[in-house]
Length: 327
Ligand code: NAD
Ligand code: IPM
Ligand code: MN
Image (spheres, rainbow, N blue to C red):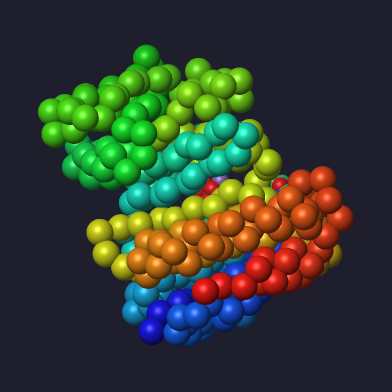
């Protein structure tokens, strides 16, 4: 029995989570999905984007399925939906954010550090009107994500590109030192270092050169949208956020897409590929994950949504995925 806490959240989050739950219900395994308030909707109902009840339910689940957090009405507000997402990642200590990008000769995996750096450093406003965010990393925080990156590379083409800004940032120089110091433990994995500005350009011009991209929190956020852009856009990009133990968080890379929310046209591919990652990493159901990924590829070519050049609705796309059937 697989217990899944579903946090649909805001904007198109509920639309793509509905698609994910339809697919989960169609699988030949026992799955229980329970929905919980999260994001802007939870601020409205409970005054908190991550209510205590939601966090408690996530802790006891086998996996967390997440839609999106963020509503324009909360831009600049003291309590914001995105704070709930960042807090949930920290509370569950899901430090390894896997963001695969596939398509047209491209098959890369971004391994993004998810619970450190600028997102978790001291920040605020000063009396003089200035604002600050601070980026810190400990060697231990870098080592655990780097080991994840090397180990994942071993299951792929054994090539790690560690991305940093070591020509400017002290945290990046520490990052590079720690990553380089681990090569003795992974002699079979080729390691290269690349500065983040160049990495952004390389992802646009020649994404096929990459296998695993290992990087810190902020760089990974930006580069994963760039990589998605080279593979069909944000609608198709999935992610898995993993710690040392369950539960992991499985969510599309995209946000709440307020510009198309409520129209029923959101591409559920990112969410469905996140379900495939859930099947792989939370349930060990690799065969079902393969079947789901193939069914999604089929739907992308036969029943594409608007963002990828078609006219299908979210429901029609999902119908095609379901029509393939799972064994
Ligand atoms: P976004 O990812 O929501 O949208 C960017 C563009 O991509 C939009 O034009 C949108 O229509 C399109 N798009 C995204 N997903 C799509 C899909 N599944 N199908 C079709 N088109 C899709 O990014 P944004 O506009 O920068 O952010 C909107 C809000 O979402 C903000 O509040 C932001 O903080 C939040 N956000 C949340 C998450 C998350 O919850 N993990 C991730 C990113 C952004
Ligand atoms: C993502 C999002 C989040 C991030 C925001 C919404 C906090 O952009 O998951 O990529 O920056 O990590
Ligand atoms: Mn992002």
